[in-house]
Image (cartoon, rainbow, N blue to C red):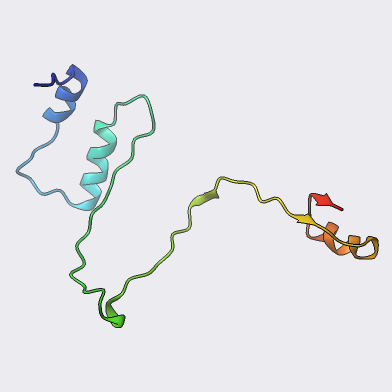
Length: 96
């Protein structure tokens, strides 16, 4: 059997397994028990009790990340010299 580290044993003592935490208390508990050397994350699994076979019960959504995807947008344009002004206006980085 795998041995549990002292750090994890201490964190497990802070959690009451018989108690149902509300959202604010749960988030506070996650922040209190975070002790790893990296940015920890949590997962949420939510049962919506919907049937995706029916069109009115399908769920599609997007999430906006606070810092975008983290990738810089690079625009390259293949234009003639008279259209060069419009490309510089949209801040294209490479012009040919």
